[in-house]
Amino acid sequence: MDENLKTNLYAFIEYIQVERNYSEYTVKFYRQDIENFFMFMAEQGISKLEDVEYFDARLYLTKLYEKEYSRTSLARKISSLRSFFKFLMREKTVKENPFTLISQSKKHLKIPKFFYEEEMEKLFEVCQGNSTLDFRNLSLLEVLYSTGIRVSECANIKLSDIDFDFETIHVKGKGRKERIVLFGTFASEALNNYIKNARPLLMNKTDHEYLFVNFRGTPLTTRGIRHILNNLISKAALTGKMHPHMLRHTFATHLLNNGADLRTVQELLGHENLSSTQIYTHVTKEQLRKTYLSHHPRA
Image 1 (cartoon, rainbow, N blue to C red):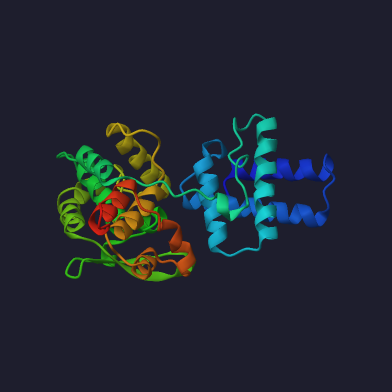
Image 2: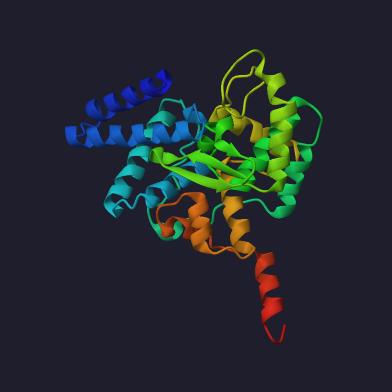
């Protein structure tokens, strides 16, 4: 655990033990809940508590729902984190409490944010260029959008995991689970170009099998990928801030909007339960209009 995270956790534990006089049982579970959230932060490439946003808190709640905790357990976990960030605000460690507006009621979960196809085109456009980093960024964006894999899974891809003949990638997912994901011709072309013309130059005398590397030649971390994606959205002049998980949301949304069945999307996303995939069954207004015009006899 990062030393800064550990320091803030210990300060909070001391606070609820001494000032709030919480029971040993309550302190134990508060500590466990917060440490689990720290693991989530690491998966998302978030290293600082002040960088946690409302979107991150909501995504974490979604992940808790996927694990099918009881309503009581969910309420306690959210309460633990809300109290923790309230304490951090008091200590002036953070400016806002991202868990203030989080409700443990499932019906309040909002539709995941995603990019429209026109927005994705703008992101691809800003990756066009002839530098080694342009080739890498285009390849990275194509892989994330083409496969729907998690950023943590993307960071762990090795050259030997890619099969260009069948256009598949062997992915090591959460809980050491493995699956095969597909990628298309655009991603294949971008990957080939990056591996042949950019990666060797970026490696800078380093030697490892990881696919995506930074300008020093060392493997890209989840935090590094997050930074790259935020730079791309800034260059594309799109409103808001990109969360890496938005590309996963976009992958699933575009597949479903274009006729893919829910079971196929579940398999591609690596979800154990279909209920986890059903959050993506929303459709865009444009898709609703197309469906209405093509199916209603009086349209």
